[in-house]
Image 1: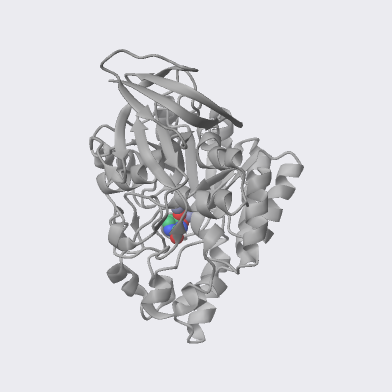
Image 2: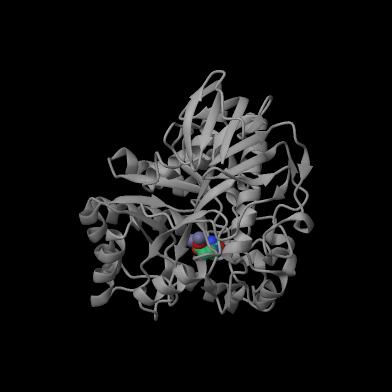
Length: 454
Ligand code: URP
Ligand code: ZN
Ligand code: ZN
């Protein structure tokens, strides 16, 4: 299939310009003025639209056995929802339970994805235990192109690892040139605070945030940064949620630690008052790190615009209302997570670019290019360039709409962003040259998505 996309404004790699794009097969083959195409090419008029590189979500959970249940999406539902929001690649956290061997986890996660996804995907390899087989398996997976690890400092007894294991993971990552992504909360502090609050009869979702206060995350962030520093590895803090933790990350960066920072869309737009609604309405907004005091938003947005925060991801992790009820009597039993894979870029465009908090160039960088660079996908992905995969988002900034669970493609029965207005949406999305979304409809091919080796 040949596509000729005419008259759009391309925004990529810090530049904005008008040009036509020719796509032949899966690849962008020409960018220029007044391009011509064969008679059987499909011609798309992108006048008054932006053309962005396909968005990349570097932090999603599709299959996740967690807190006695499972996150709800499959690769089919998750990838269709991703594409509707312009995300053409996601990186899933492969997170075997600590009792499960990594090699078995690799098989489980890849079997669940293969042939099921409509967009491209890859994995951060979760290291949830360290024994003599772990290192050998990690070396093998890195050789096969899985070039990022994931560690949890939180979730003691599930995914969490101790400092000895953390040191081994970072040391191996430094040797292999692999980036280590980390959930940074001090697990022991969380556990102590949870027990204290429960003993005081504080059982509702409004106590989730006080059980993991900002200092607990700031300590985790500084702690992780120190391990990165001592081993000479590259680090990436996932879902950083507040100004105090940001300070810890920036302080480490200033002394030369190779640390990138991710923020997720719930922490930019929601705050702890949502979880304070109480009962299951509050439980819908329980995630970790928790939604914070609104006073943190400004620091996060400003750091994002300055590039001190590198990427905006989702931490997409859907649990439905029935699952959220598992924590009715005890907030520590509420499955943690908020779904967002479909809405990330539209929300960032609306509440960032459209509300003048974020430049268009930084928007594209944070939602696509930077993740491609950090995780070894660039320039195949994350850029509108000749030779790159034709993953393109033709974005209509004149669209007006509202988010609702009723119209969402995510496999869930509520939206954390219900009623949020949108100032734009992808009109056409292509995955390696195939049109996968058109005028708000999924028209792609389930199973076309490939495992990206990086
Ligand atoms: O609440 C969250 N974030 N759930 C998903 C697991 C994780 O910590 O990323
Ligand atoms: Zn996490
Ligand atoms: Zn996560």
